[in-house]
Length: 504
Ligand code: HEC
Image (cartoon, rainbow, N blue to C red; front, top):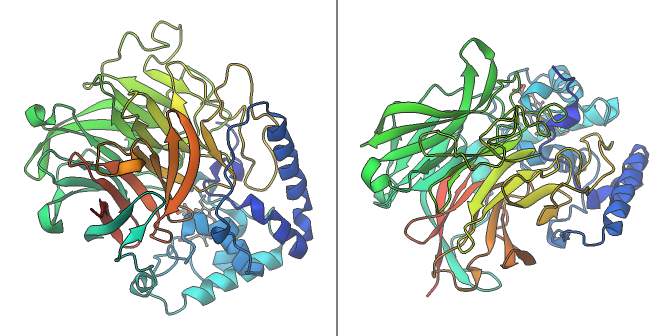
């Protein structure tokens, strides 16, 4: 097994642009500044660099100091900027001062919690601990929910005025993926392992008889989609973390399908398993989309084994796969005849792809993935592409060190867009149909870190502008076009299913 470094698990890193600020307060970050300059020099030598976005100055964290600043920059992306993941927490490793210091210092890298012993001084870790324990003292989830921004009125964007309609705010746990049925009801996955059907008027029913899902670390029940011919076959597809039948400490991303009958699945079959199983709780991916020809695409993350899997074709980890609806492998897949290659691979060199969408006009598959610290990417996928992870990247390691000096290389694809600092892009969708005027064919990406919806204004395959919407809404896990023509979101804290309703 490859050695694990904390950096491999960095999901939602800190913000580059704040480097200057830390510098004034924290001299040990001189190294980081140096490295970030090094990186930016690299990208400025790029003849045609993909556009780097300047994060809205309104989101810059400028007025905080010490522990709060460190929390916001290093922890809030995963644990919630308002410390939501610590409020009313059932602590795994204990919440005494010493235990929390231990957790922060040593991390639980196999489950996605980086170690900060090398990043912060002992005193900084103690201050962070004190900050967390003081801030959450006496707080409840209900109190946090009251602090959510009021998004009940008319909302103006650059090109459209809309209302946000909440179908339900009763989804327990972490809602992850959504799919609308032809009858208008909406399937919502909950990462802890439950599938819900949101009936009309927001009534929530649990769907029973799911495959055996392991909910651990970043894994659990992930995405859901329905068969293009659902009207006739009622097939629902689920992606989820599955345990190795012969060693339950090892997990992988798998896809099962079943027939939806009322509120129960039957005839469950596993149509895809990304081998090998890995003893890790991180980077499962995973999204499911059908393209216009009926092929199913499955995104699988690198499982925190950056240097072992994504660049090698002999395994299914850190790849996007293309399969038939029943799991058969299309013979025109790019590596179908390549000796030793896993023949479901469509593209490779991928880190943690939690967004995927089919372009409404070109039919092409687009993918969004979490970078390490910086370097979140949007990629336009073509059969056989190598998207470069971890050989080329616009990101750096969690502790500020670099793992590559390269941002481009022959034979590896450039992203259409990348974010440095990271926004932690999750579910994403192109807007299609005619409800949304000038938003048509733009790409909408949910941000876990900044808790907003990011709009990439598109002209064909090119990003021509940006807008952030619904600032502070909560961690946006999925964005999907419904069959009814509305743009739907699921958001954490509390678990809400919402749609954007354009104002006529
Ligand atoms: C990349 C995502 C990520 C980041 C960034 C992150 N954490 Fe964590 N953290 C996790 C996960 C996932 C766990 C749960 C690990 C487990 O259950 O084994 C965790 C667990 C913890 C725990 C133990 C909680 C318990 O139940 O006992 C503490 C304390 C903690 N984190 C503090 C922090 C602090 C402070 C920071 C910032 C310096 C931070 N984390 C940054 C993902 C993250």
